[in-house]
Length: 308
Image (cartoon, rainbow, N blue to C red; front, top):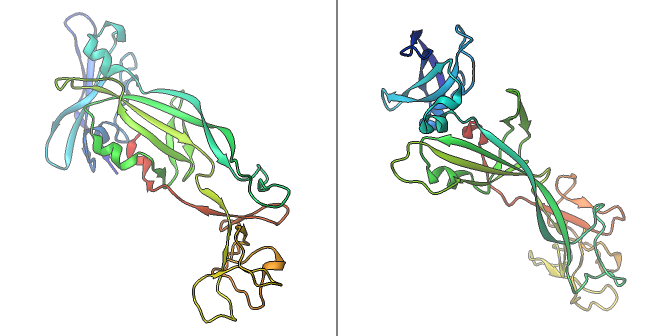
């Protein structure tokens, strides 16, 4: 984690050729892997913050002045008592605070059960030949921030990944909210527009999508069952009708341990492939005639490194 130590020797103010007063503060930042992490290290001043000794001045620019070594960045914050709109266009870009926009996105997915976990089956107990499509809304957050360049390697490390631990996102009035682990997914990290190589600041957009449970739940069904004590084979066995011993051709519901839920299809000595006992392992419908198994399809990443 990046650590900032202030240089108190530059903690002063000076005149600006009769137009106002200004001041600057500097920090030595260690533990940062790039300039972006150094600028947003813990105690470094943020845009708009008041000077601790001269409250009439606020931060108008934060940037890297030099890199003393491969491990130490020098970050400088510039203060003055002039209104922000009086700055040059390039400086106004530097002064723009972090921007946030909340929205929802709509998506259509194939549904296998209702909100209570009851499977969608016809009167014969089998799936419908035509899939049932449902529309869902997902909460999204877009964060825009001016940064000293764009590194696509950062995007490759985070896109389509979930937060492996809780992290904070800044909100209004210098407050932040905590997002619990595995609830946020990165959709994109990319510039908001085209840019040229001579630009020293680029507006970067971070896109997030939120969901309480990102696991994929699949209805446990098939034409095979777990190993049986009356068989020498260690492979799953074809499910057969109990009376006729005829192999079934239509998938039937399984109980989460590799056995058919329907007693008419069970054989003496049936045993499951796994012993699933917790709600985290599977989800049973209220009627008990269907079991859903969870699968995690997203990798995890440390969102705290984004320093939002």
